Amino acid sequence: MTDMKFYGHGLPNVEATHLSGKLIVLEGPDGVGRSTQVALLREWLEAQGYAVFTSGLRRSELASAGIEAAKQGHTLGHVTMALFYAADFCDRLEREILPMLRAGFVVLTDRYIYSMMARDMVRGVDKHWVQSLMGIALVPDAVFYLKTQVQDLVPRVLSTRGFDYWEAGMDFLPSSDYYQSYVEYQERMLRTFDELSVEYGFTVVDASRPIEDVFADLKREIGEIVAELKHKEA
Amino acid sequence: MATLPDGTQLPGKLFIVEGIDGSGKSTQLDLVHKWLTTSGYLVAFSEWNSSPLVAKATKRGKKKQLLTPTTFSLMHAVDFSQRFQQQILPALRAGAIVLADRYIYTAFARDAARGVDREWVREIYSFAAKPTVALYFRVPLDESLRRIITGRPALKYYEAGLDLGLSDDPYECYRIFQGRILREYDAMVDEFGLTVIDAAAPLVQQQEIVREILRPHLEGALRIEPNPWRVALGKEHLTGRYLDSLTHSGGQSE
Image (cartoon, rainbow over all chains, first blue to last red; front, side, top):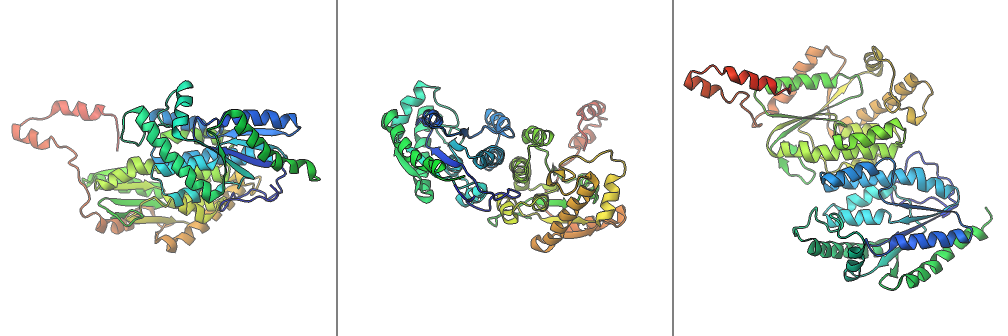
C-alpha cells in the first residue's frame, strides 16, 4: 500500500501520508474458518519477521460495548445498527488500523466493511446508502473471500457455539425455527457476498477444502504481497 | 405535512428548531410546546443526542477523548436514527405534532465545521423526513457568546471544539468553532428552505412570530382530551376527588 486510497470521500483531518504497511482482509460467512486462518497466518508471518496486527469487527473501544448491549435488547432498527457498526469500524480504522499501517505493520482483519454491507443489504437497507456510508473505508491491498456452501457451515456452527440469533437472521426473517432461518439467512448472505465479490474484486478461496489447503493458498497469495515490504527500501 | 424522502406525505406535523448555542431556540420551542399542549394537541418531543442507548458510548468517547470528527458524526447519526425510528416517525404516522430540538441540520452544520465531507453527512441522514417547518434562530456570534459564557464555569472539550486544535484557549476555540457553525447554518437557509427567525429580537416577540408561522400548519393535527373523565364526572355529579392523587402521583411534567 503506497498511497492512501479510500472507497469514497475518506476521512477528514487524516494526513494523507504514505502507508508503509499492508492491509489484508479475510471475508466470508460465520463458521467458514476465518479466525483459524488469521491465527495461522499471523504466526507464519511473524516467524518470517513481519510485524502483524490483527483486527475484527465489533472490537472498538468506542462502540463495541454499546453494540453488544443493543444486540441483547434487539432494540435497534437496521439503519441505526448499520450506523453503529460504522462508528465501531471508523474508530478502529482511525485509531488502530491507520496508525499500524503507517508504522509498517501487516494488518490482518477478520472481516471488513463487506460483511457489514452484506448484513445490511440482506435486511433491506439501501445498497447505495451503505456504500456511501462506507466511503470512509481504506481500500485494502487484498481481500480474500473464503467461500463455501451453507451445508458445510452447519456442522461447524453446531459443533462450536450453536446457532446465534443474529447469524440466523432471527431479527427479520419470518421463521421462528432456528435451523430454517439460519439456512435462509446464510444463503442470502452468500448471494450478497458473491455480488460484492465481483464488484470489489475479491480473491475467491474455496474454503470447503481442508484447513491446510486453504492455508496453503492464502500463504502463497499473501506471501507475494508482503514480500514487497522486504524488497523495498524504506 | 412532514414528507419522507420517497415523497410519502405523513399525516403528522414536524416542527424543528435550529441555531447555534445561545440562540434561544430551546426556550422558544418550550413555549411552543406549552402552547400546543394547552391547545389540546398531542405533542411528541425529541431532543438531539438524547437516546439512552448510545448515550453511554458517546459519554465514554467524550470522557476519554476518543472521538474523531467522523466517529463523532456517526455516533450522533446512531442517536438520531434511533430517535427517528422510535419516536419521530411513529408519531408522524399517527398524525401527531412532533417538536424536535435540533434536527439533521445540526449534524450538517457541526460535522462540516469539523471538516467532515458535507455530501457524505447529507447522504447518511437521507432517510430523515423533511420537516413541515424548520425554524432557524439566527443570532450574531457575539450575542450568543455573551449568553452562553455568562454564568458558565468552563466549556467542555468537544463543546468548545478543542478536538480541532483551533486554539489552546477554550474560549477562543469556541468562538472560532461557533463561527464556522454559523456560516454553515447561513448557507443552509436556501439549500433547505429554513425559516429564519431573528433571535436577537425580544423573546416574547419572537414567540409571537413563531406562533404565527406555525398556526396555519396545525389544521388536522391529532388532538387529545387532556382530562377525559370530565364528562363522566359531570354526568354523575361527582367531584373526582380521588383523581387528583392519580394525576399528581404520575410524576411526569409536561
